[in-house]
Length: 562
Image (cartoon, rainbow, N blue to C red):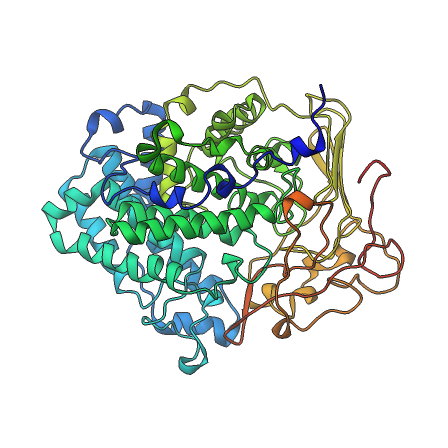
């Protein structure tokens, strides 16, 4: 029997619909009660990981610990404002965090020895001594003090949240050991996490990624919230504050889900799926795990939401062969399987055998973990993989390799000559518009592979700089339509978000319609939330959908697409 339209409208697709009112907030864990991982002193647990995994991870950790602690001078922060260079500061910034994460993982591998605890103490002290945790490119402190961060008004960006998450998971593993080793360290850690992550999350309504003014939400929302929740739950914040964090987080995540198309497509590309939908999965794991004791049998299945299930399958839809993926928007064509364990856990949670098969195939012949000076390494993801017995026992007969996928939400189609094999021809084409997050002027572009090897490519994106997310974005050659396999309707490159490129400093982000009324992307959004002259900028262009009237908005839409 087919379901009527009135019945289908009743299917919940928001967390607030699963547990209305203050249900989630009331179920928030009391301080110190949520222990998702055992402490590093539990040697039976941490030594249960297979020897090959422990050996591989130990070699990565040892390499990171062999590096010296880095120095972050104020002039390094100023360098971005002066030259536009992001990499110089960020390399040092991420190296410091990678080294601290390595010290924490080493205690899980070898136990909380005194020498390793000393490394942890040094790292925590260094991070708490920093004037701010926000990257220079994201700093929003204000014009009254120039580009340097104001410790009294911290900016909560992706990596301020990521730093808080690093310290929160460190506390979960080593808090008791630190109390015995150097008691002030844990107290300072918790105080700083509250001041720089929890309090800004609750007290300020002007963060665009909260979606309180109708902004379109992307990876920033779920990435940040995935760290705010453990900061509140693991750092012994008081009960009232923890409940307030839960209540706000649920609202934010529901607004994020409102911005997602029903087919689960990610218009930021597969590289950012890892910090968009994958971070949503971490939010849901944390929320359901932390609230389970209070709710008991009344705990709703957050992984039953149709949109949560659809979002999981985007990597399958965009997979070409091996570690090669369709890489429209900002992202490399090759995606190492560093989050394969998370994808496998996601597949288990939603009961998707193909997703688990894909994740297990990602692991074959590759590294189980990532430990380098990049924003792609999160302590929790490493610890969760190390502790996942189901992951190590997973076996794969190869990638599922679906024959074709049509993603109407972003107007991307992929097709391979024969299902289940990389042999033959593979094609991916993109319609859509140029008002997407991480947009390239690539409407109508396509990429092709033969026997799993690329023959027509998308070159991806250069190393990020100030120009990448500012008014000069479309002067960068990798962003221009002439460097994509796109049709040329005029002698000029296609324009971003309509016939006229808007000045970045005079725009604000707009919002997509709720998922319940979704038909296709209609509103322009910034390629990435950016900072211009100390103020966040966005994009107000609403692209034309007609195929011939406006350069840059051509739509390659098959007749069967709605």
